[in-house]
Figure (cartoon, one colour):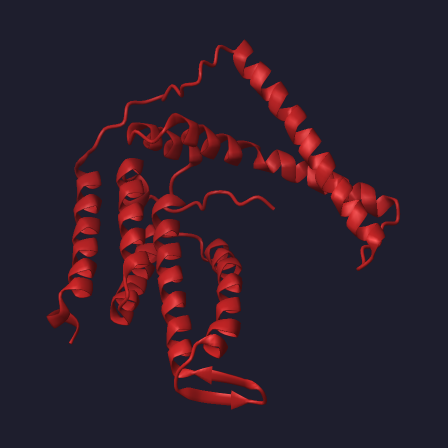
Length: 254
């Protein structure tokens, strides 16, 4: 199922210019990714959680996305504590978990969720069209903008093709298992999706040329910064500065 942008109430974050939100998300995420201090990661997670609450995102959709992302982080908890050398705190049969490994897994979890929260709060409150226009306004290379926009625009088309192929397999009595027939079937399925995707891309390209597309996006309205945009930009700048100070000024986290 293709994910769509989360819908939120008319909060300050949602009404802010998309360029400010992009720059804020990039700066905050970079700061959190570079931190090596557990206290900074905790503060970053608490801050990003407050931003999600202020953005007014739907709880059900938000929880669903958090579960999906943290399933990958769960693998870190299953590996890192048992592979990191240090003081053993848990010993079960041949598996020994170290204190350093548990702290490292916790540290990674805090940073990943802080980055996830801030991106959900800032970017999920903008539609893909606004994001594409903002990327162009920020001088992001045109090819990267095209890749982002058309990937989002036509992923659901490939998803529909995949669902139709799955129905076709079920009507023919296909029962997947761990055997050569199953592997061949899924290989054919991937091949069909690639061929249909290539064919659809050619048809879309020709249709766009017929409509006069010359490789540039024409925004429907001019982007301009207002007082509300400045407020969020200043707040995010101060938050990033605070985290940087906590990280690189030793006296602040003693």
